[in-house]
Length: 355
Image (cartoon, rainbow, N blue to C red):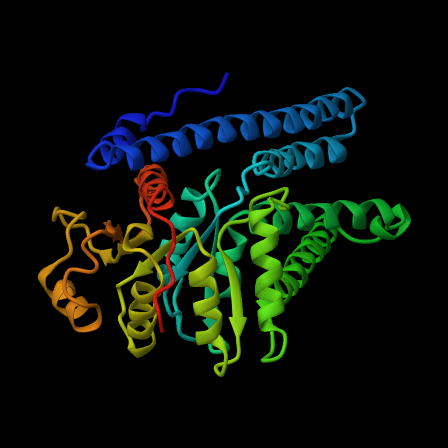
């Protein structure tokens, strides 16, 4: 049996604050499903890790220190893989936020929170133009931990196993160890570059609709076996607005980051409220370590939104600020954002307004 979620009381307070009983009930069911799936996936991870640890114990009994160390490291790898099974649910959450070419690591905090909160609820994705350069910091929430480091360790292991011992014995102990470490670093960097290029969905002006259609259909038919955090899709400047509109119509919930409202973000906000029911939209923005109410828009944000969205049209949205820097409360953010997203997913059906 999975352990009780320590933040159930927080999630309950969030969803029960809604006056709409049907929406509250639907959100509660989504959170219960999420807890069950997280428990099941953790069990898969523990099972795979346990098998690997047993093999490590066997190798230790056979006095094979190298294999023992590799298998113990591999146990963490298989735990991460196993604990992502069955978490990619057939729902699509769209993150609207422009990430410029000079985006820093701190700019991806929301994508990280969103990626963790969507586990067991939906698959999050963001649409960017060709100026975006932050592919890996978003996508690698699971991949970097479960592939790059273990693969680097495996590369060192394979190098030692394949290299004739007579050659290794010619080097001093320190020099030989340095060579092995260099091999591991080279494997890590090679995979990093490959993932940075390959794991971002790209399309040209002719095939972007077909690519998006495949992604949405694959999401809604639940053909993802493992969960990999916030997806990134890049499009040419000439079609990224059409791509955003396509995703707005296909998404089950929308998260709009108001931290940096540029001209492009203004267009995204206006388009979202034209196409999507406000009950399915979550408004969020970055704050410092303040004690202000994080469930109310500031006066300045309200005034800015009123310039973009007709008066009162955003009143049905869910509102939640997030902290600029990740801290020890990151796990709490996962549960809080999961409850917020459950309410958005439980909102009214997406409607298409007349253009």
